[in-house]
Every structure is written in C-alpha cells, then in structure tokens.
Length: 105
Image (cartoon, rainbow, N blue to C red; front, side):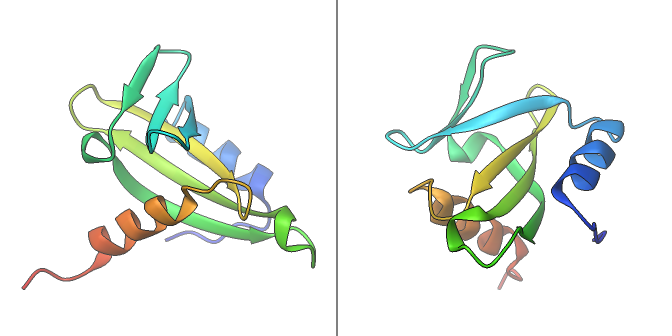
C-alpha cells in the first residue's frame, strides 16, 4: 500500500487511478451514498480497497481516514473521507476492512 504525505496527495492519486465518485456515509442506515450516481450502497455491495489514516494535528477530531471504495456490480470507484470521531459508523468501515484483510480459515 502506498504512503502519502497528506490527504490531498492521496485524494489526487486515487482520482488519477479512477476513484472518482465521492461517497458519504449515512450513519442511520450504515450505507454509503453517492449523490453523483444517486445510489445507496449496503456494506455488502462495496469493497474497501485501501484505507489511509492522516493525523492532521494533535486534536482527535481532526484526524482523517480516507477509504478507497469499489462497487463490483457497477464498476464505480470512489472515496469516502471520515473525520475520525465525527462519524459514528466509522467503526463499521474499520470492521469491514479488518474482515477483508483477515485470512480465510
């Protein structure tokens, strides 16, 4: 996995690699939403391809997590930025990432 100096650098590189959709997390449904495609995605419908954490400063609420998301059924790829501590569902995505990275028995 690549290392980036900043969130801006990571977003720029991911956009160049085709992650063009901007997703937002719906905390009440635990779904992702893309206004551009007017699409809601259940956690089973997308993959977390990459995840990057950025410590913007010592304030916990200004740490960011950037997720590179793909949707196999449609081929759509995009990003989700989670300001750690502000999205109550960030653990859902962290858990999904951990499940994807865990070896299968």
